[in-house]
Amino acid sequence: MALQESGEMYLETIYVLSQESNEVRAIDVGAQLGYSKPSVSRALGLLKEEGLVRKSAEGFICLTKAGEILAERIYERHSLLTKLLIDIGVDEQTASEDACRVEHYISEKTFEALKAHIKNRGA
Picture 1 (tube, rainbow, N blue to C red):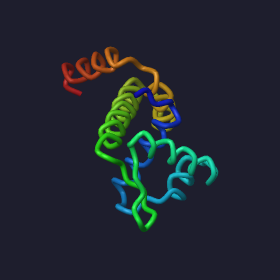
Picture 2 (cartoon, rainbow, N blue to C red):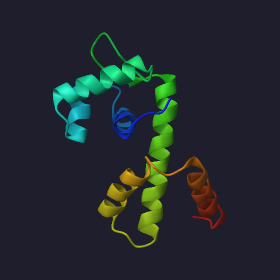
Picture 3 (spheres, rainbow, N blue to C red):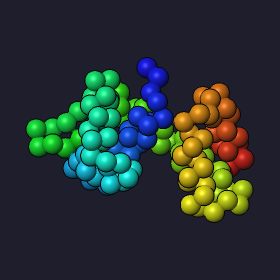
Picture 4 (cartoon, rainbow, N blue to C red):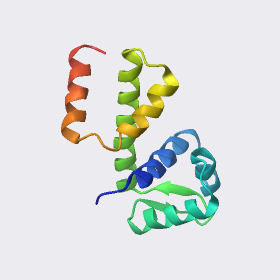
């Protein structure tokens, strides 16, 4: 399944928020991303249809196993790209913002090459 950039952003945000708290709500996701309640509701509905998230009886959002695997991959890309940009002298905020843009478009082949390069140089 090919997820659009916005869907990936939602998954990554839910993943990060779930690392901080077991109780992630739609309002938390919207606040983190700066999106309106209707936008968040629609996106979460689409992610639920794709089998990537589920909502508990209490209204908390959690990732399914498939959603977690995908979110971890997206977050790994973001983290590695941010670190790489900081290592070459980009300030942390700019590095994170740029990594966020690149993480959605970089090929798997290029990302794996970057990972190998960083590992080989001992970073």
